[in-house]
Amino acid sequence: MNKLYMNGKWIESASGRRFDVLNPASGEVIGQVADGNAKDTQKAIQAAHDACESWAHTLPKDRTQLLSDTARAILVNREHLARVLTQENGKPMHEASSEIAYAADFFTWFSEEAKRVYGRTVPSNVPDRRRMVIKQPVGPVGAITPWNFPLAMIARKVAPALAAGCPVVVKPAEQTPLSAIELFRVFHDSGFPRGTVNLITCSDPVKVGNELLHDERIRKITFTGSAEVGKFIMKECADQLKRVSLELGGNAPVIVFNDANIEKAVQKVVASKFRCAGQTCICPNRIFVQRDIAGTFSETLAQTVKTLRVGDGIKSDTQIGPLIDKQGLEKVKTHVADAVSRGARCLIGGNTPADQALRNGFFFEPTVLVNVTTVMKIFNEETFGPVAPIIAFGTEKEVLEMANSTPYGLSGYVYTNDLGRAFRVSERLECGIVGVNDERPSVPECPFGGLKQSGIGREGGSEGIEEFTETKYISFGID
Ligand code: SIN
Image (cartoon, rainbow, N blue to C red; front, side, top):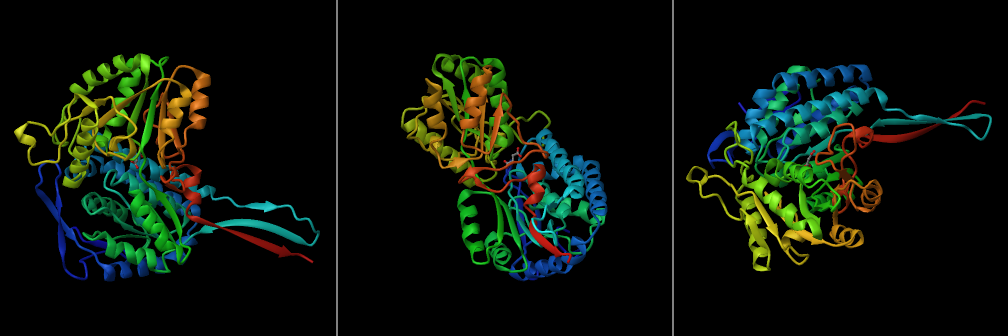
């Protein structure tokens, strides 16, 4: 039960230790999993290394078949996977269920891309040479995945790596190993060759992470998580010039112009701001509203937020679950307290819920703050919680300056009915993903990733598979 998976087998950790997994809605232990360490990681790396040659030479059509079978199997297990995910992550069941479909979609998309890893021929400038460029798998990949989308983020990394011909060693977040284990059961049943998919669950990410970062057999690290850890990974990988893709935090601006449909903009802002209790990397973090509509927008937003039901995600009527852990909850409290102490006002929320049934979970009330300014923590740092801070602005120029004033640049949103403005603003926003009147731009077929300190590389789209390939130029002498 809940073991490590490597070389096609479930095994106990070398130490025999296990660690507890908590339900953030109740603080209760819901399971125990094998606690992998450096020795286990070495074994998994060896398994991936051994599988590398034959997986790289598997025919693309066979990889396509395996990945699309996996997509189907994920959907067959959708209800079960969603339940496990909700219990360890806290998000409402309907969100968990759409995450499972999203994860399956990555397998479907990359099953098709496996056939399209094209190179090119280059016209030769001399008669007796022919030039060719090919794409080859980069080699064994270390995938370090987060807790906020425990299955979709494994899928977004593993599906393109496998499609490109690279075996993987996955280290899931210590808060959410159970759903990763369930996903690996699906992989096992789908029949991936031994060593192509390996899983190390662990309570100490540093020990396992260090092996993945420093072992020469791992040729690429793909990571989703904080900017701080992303920078550490990049520094550690510099010694070997190991390839890295980093999908890091954001500080997403939303810009609502006075020509936007206010009702629709509110509905969409609520949908993106409060998804996963505000713990997505592309959640709106700063909501800029043009001054003449700021009052109406804020009131409408507060009225809508007031109706959101907070509770255990496993209950069918829950709309907002808990934060992932105590540390996450403390950060949200600190940001709200800092904002209020500097003059912000809570229109709704601002506390932990009074409901006694929720007292042992890591809940925070969905909150709307007005009078937010650029000096507050909530403006400058990613809150990762259910708090919507509103900042009033005057002109397009002023709002672009404020929106671009942070070191991050993952996603941004614009609400307007003026086409020219939509183009001007989306082109000038310093972020990798822009939603124009679109609260949910992430899809498997388009590139996801950030500018500035929000990361390097892209996941999804045709770019997503490129990240797992190397370019080789071959020149033929034909004289
Ligand atoms: C993330 O928060 O990193 C993923 C969000 C998404 O794919 O929509």
